[in-house]
Image (cartoon, rainbow, N blue to C red; front, side):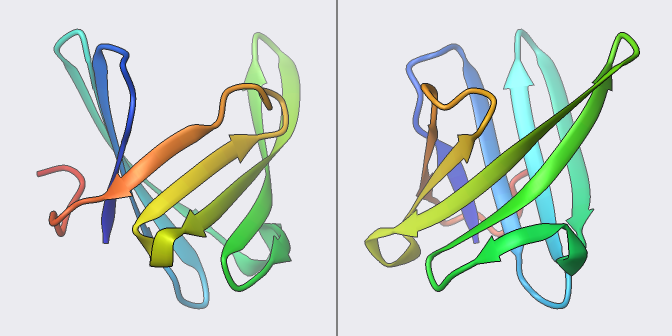
Length: 107
């Protein structure tokens, strides 16, 4: 399944999340003519909470030599037709996604 972000901004963002022993997240992002298609894998050991309609994991990245850590939470609503993605380091700006008919976010 592929979800596309609902936004008024001038970019396009889609994600696909495949569940199994690991979760694979495929992201597609277009802004100002630049196109990015990335695949990342989340191991079960990264998860801090898994419920019927949501899951959370720790993420970290290095910016200018400083390691930043945050929690990402994905919550499914409306029978999985909508997703809300929240970041602990930016709680005032959740992302809202709606399911599409696409089978690959990079189409």
